[in-house]
Length: 166
Image (cartoon, rainbow, N blue to C red; front, side):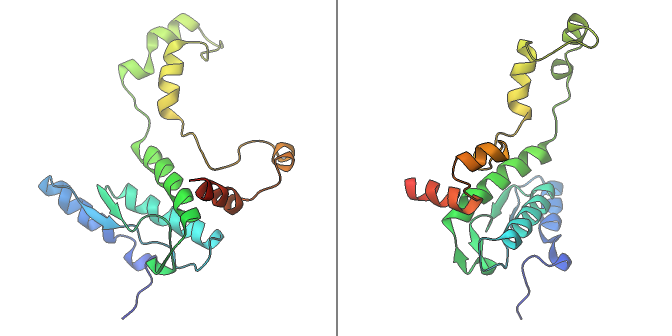
């Protein structure tokens, strides 16, 4: 019997394995339930992002079948592999959360800078900022005008260029 990989009924498939593995203090492995889409389109993007998010949040240590796959792992796209790698990175960072320790909070820096002032020039801010912000390598983060000047390339075009350059 064929069951689509990303249906809600089996989204928790990795969570049960991760919970048991955590109980026994052993690593866990699970597939990320790739997209059924046949194309590198919005369907592939949102299904992959949702499936990776749920798998990573479940606490699985090793994720197989996680990137570049279409049609329930029957085909591969190198362009999608590049995008999925970024989805994995940003999702892992989001799941990790923000470090909250006496060192990261830095009450002494807050007292020193003062209320309503700027923390961006503080070395402490620069040190922790690098770890807390995910830096995209694939998305366009500039304005529409700059994107237009650079040739109005969509995500797939940019990733295809990146793949062909390698």
